[in-house]
Length: 129
Image 1 (tube, one colour):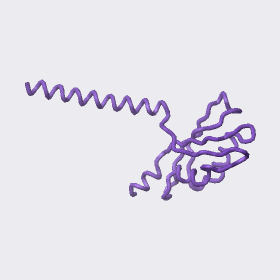
Image 2 (cartoon, one colour):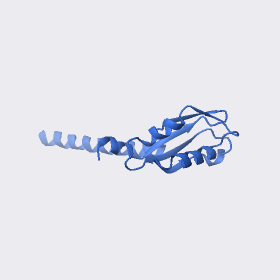
Image 3 (cartoon, helix red, strand yellow):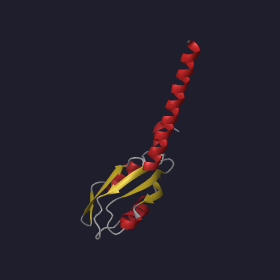
Image 4 (tube, one colour):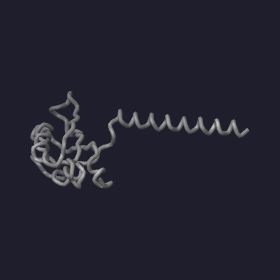
């Protein structure tokens, strides 16, 4: 598997916004995405705020391009839906930032590695003295 195939097959967090309720709801957009793109994309999860379902204008989804496809999930979805006008809404599809908890985990891991490196340098300095 080449690097481009490996990148196209990894999980991606995707922002879908520009939804203007009540004409167009998150549920309608999710159903359309699942029905039209299920041959090319595996949808892992849809993240939305449960308390604001009727008024929410965006959601996040996690998806992966199916095996053998050359395009990433974000490329496939944005090609069909980015800047599309639908029921008075202009849909936006973008690569999303990491979820807060994922970012926190990455930062903790980086901090752990930094502390280990500092400890190794300190030990080497003491041994050299």
